[in-house]
Length: 225
Length: 228
Image (cartoon, rainbow over all chains, first blue to last red; front, side):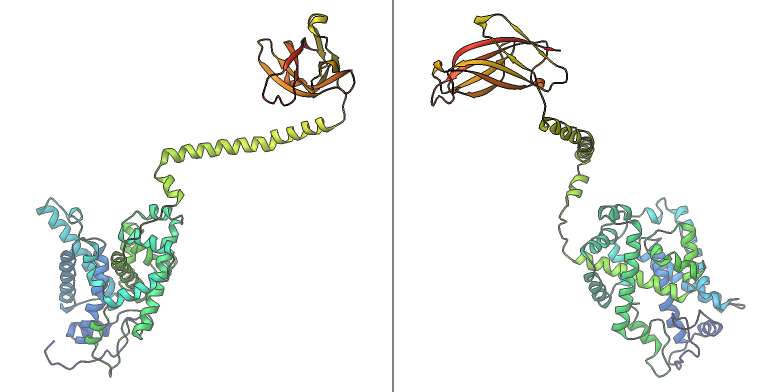
């Protein structure tokens, strides 16, 4: 996109929880054209999702970032090729499959040239790896959610999230069923999302209006979620 | 994976907790990359998890106060012994509740009920040899009587039953007779003496204020118990 090009707000709603059901042809077209709104939204939306996906497979923050950037690059290259994406509404699944391919190639490459694969590398400090998801504002909100939990629930989360205690063992020690942890996380996540909505005062994932702040700035300032 | 299925199985939480199989995980990822609602759930959950980890790491670790269950978990051998003991105690308690207590109640009722018992008069050794006490099979008690003369001058007496080996089986205190010559009666539980054995009843006089001192032997009575 040329520097100084006019910023256009999306003409239709893009993927939102409350809005459209998914991606559409307009979104993909604007992404291919280098629209800044679309590019920012694409990077913000899939950046977090790819990180979450890769975080469950890779231990190193640098490796995660490499795979994520490679995925973005390949997706945009393919979209800009003649023919592009046949089904724009499946853009998300397409990004996911490209990421899978990048991951697979990386694993094969490491297996070929390095006796130690990624999974065998000593794990980095998890909090450091999680850094892209951690922000002071989010921490404050999470802290307030944790403060509302009982001591037992806090201990359970501490054991599972921080001390890496086996989930079954943690539940057994605290005398709760194995489903309890999932329900606890579900409720905490809802509570956290609710607090975040109150704090930020906007519905997440919603494209800004034409008169609002340029979308790129919106995404950057609200990228906690 | 369809959205309804993802919602129904709480796929977002299962995904974050690593509870999905590899195939389920791949299917769910394929879904939530396309589904804004599920993507939001996963994203909020992941951000909560990462920030909770950071917040909890910053909090001073509270020393867990181990409950007694934790204490036992750290000592499996003791816990196993304790569990065994609990089982045994529970068994004993059940046995007592179902067998012993009803039996004791029945026995108590029998003891408290009016009943007859056989009584035997014992002669002292100087008057003859061993006497045979034939206790009827259905008697729970039997009585022993001896003559006591006031002339001994003791304010009270002690009757002690010795076994063949001379070991004391039991003793009872007897008040002095009010008449110059009177019979002293002892009621003895049949179960306190083994049948077919020889016993000796030793009668001693106790002086005033002689607490703790052995009395002065007055007479001995030998008898053999038998079931009639």
